[in-house]
Amino acid sequence: MATGKLAAAQQPSPAPASPPARFVVVLDAAHGGDDTGGRLTSGQLEKNFTLALNVRLRSLLAARGIQVVTTRDSDAVVEPNRRAEIANHAQAQACLSLHASESGSGIHLFTSSLAPTQTVRFAAWKTAQAAWVTRSLALAGALNSALLHSGMSVTLGRTTLPAVDSMTCPAVAIEIAPELDQDKKVTAGLDDKDYQARVAAALAAALVEWRTEAHP
Amino acid sequence: MIPRYQKFLFGILLVASLVMGVALWQLRERAHQRMIAGQDSAPTSAPEVAPAEQATLLVANDSDSSLLTQVHSLPLPADPGSRARAVLGKLLDIYAAPSAAHPVPGGGSSVLQVFLLPAPALAPPAINPINPATGRPKAPASSARPAEAQQTGPQLAVVNLAGNFTASHPSGIETETLTVLSICGTLHANLPRVTQVRFLVDGLQRATLAGHADLTRTYLAADATPAEGVHP
Image (cartoon, rainbow over all chains, first blue to last red; front, side, top):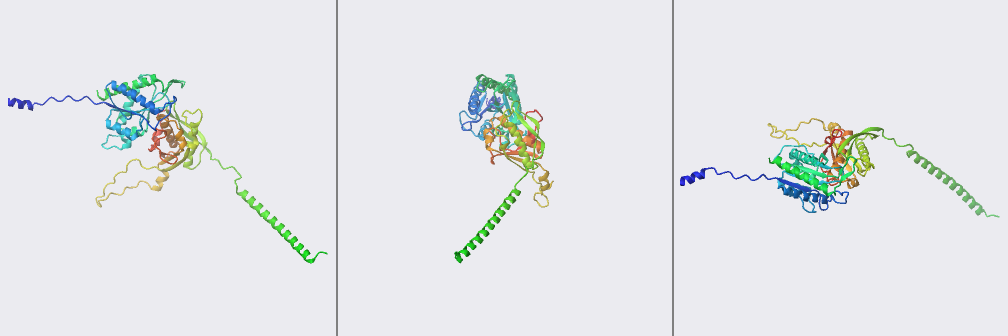
């Protein structure tokens, strides 16, 4: 009996079920507090637009079982370094910085203009995104596909944003501009609720697709 | 009968009047000569205008987020710093025009100065190997003389913008990025030695142009010169 107990103890115990892969998205509603951002044609401030989109997108992602971390949930000042700190502590698989502008048309997707580098143990704070640029470009591609699939015009570009350049996650800055037709006439303004809903739905669909790619 | 002393006094007064008249006439002549001499030193011909030359501008277009190359003929000074300021002034004049494809108020007067300095190396300096004989780091081998490098080496352009330009610049990632890249690309196109660009606003460092584009970093001018029609 004792031998049997010992044998049972020596048998390898079944491996504990591995926890489901953690998939976290950081939503960074740009501006806030005294930093109002741009003033949109409707008179709305960019900081309020990004916060509203942040709330809408968070609900859509939560409904799809995606964990969301936000850099702000109210009209508060959050410094760029603090935004990057929140994103980096979350160890997220996608970080989206939300913006709005009356310039241009459609959706502008920006990734960091830093040159891609290898991952290093200690990265410089202001260029930490360099090791993630390749993944950020892939995330921008996934977002681009989903937005195009929803019938929206998309512009891809590279830029330098203080918060994004310090993030250690696949990071994309999304700037939403009015939708214009061939004659440069507005077909969907930033205050158009249907347009906002279509953008949020396309971004949520893109992140669900991105989760599948990250954790097949 | 007139007394003798009165005749004598009259004579003295007459002579004094004549002397004073001559003195006044001479003083007037001297003042006149001084005035003529002053007029001679004033410019009497128009200042020479720098000859018109071809300048290449990278002009932003908001509708398709592109930088398009345009060639303009404009007077360009010989001094490189003044030349850079003149080229950027023309670029910002285009943006301030009523039907601009990339509307930004302010115009050419928004470029206060452009300073050209020897470009610092962006990569960290290599660690010098240890000399086994002395146990101390070897002195780095100089590849070029400092004076020669200053005359032919890469340059850093420091663009000092006016505060009212940044205050009135439209806010947005795309529009701000296009402004920064078009300035960097235009500088590099006309002054090929300019490889790096930094920005000041009213002589001071500023975090962003209008809330988005980072103005604290050094921009590489070559990165802002894409092929025609390609998004930056």
